[in-house]
Amino acid sequence: MNDLTQILSAIEQGDPLASEQLLPLVYDELRTLAATHLARERPGQTLQATALVHEAYLRLIDPSSPIEWDGRGHFFKAAAEAMRRILVDRYRRKCRLRHGGDHQRLDFEVAIDSIASPGPDLAALDDALNALAQHDPTSVEVVKLRYFVGLTIVEIAQVLEIAPRTVDRHWAYARAWLHHKLSEE
Image (tube, rainbow, N blue to C red):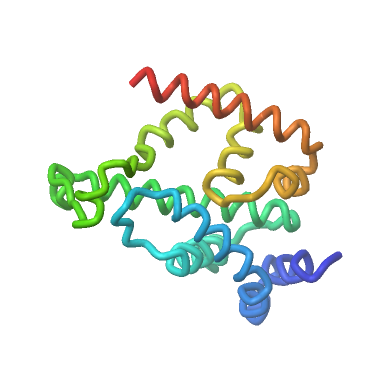
């Protein structure tokens, strides 16, 4: 067992010091992945990669709802899902009328630079991912790990314990399926 698996096992058993050991072990990797994802967000995004990592980490290591960890792959899948939930929830909150959802904020640079394209509609993407999960949950896992966490095809293959070529096929299928589904709306 590697260090991460041992620490996750200790957290599962209720060791309070284990969660303190986990963050330094995975922080840099999660921070890099969060920064990669946030770089693809719409201009004016106020959430920083550090805050996203910390919020996701707190959700993962919540003592009130312990998770039975099944190794490194399970941890990063859960991290991808936590980051996805955080980003979708923040997006939906910002779209509500009481939070200025009917107003559009523009930075001076963004107003000048008409070439910049807006990021995806996260609420529609979330709905499409839920629909895709009904018939192809593996492709949804690949999308979460690739899009929301920023892992490479090889890293996803290691996390999901499948061949990189299989991950590549799921990624291609999911992109085509999501493009079709999102362009319908």
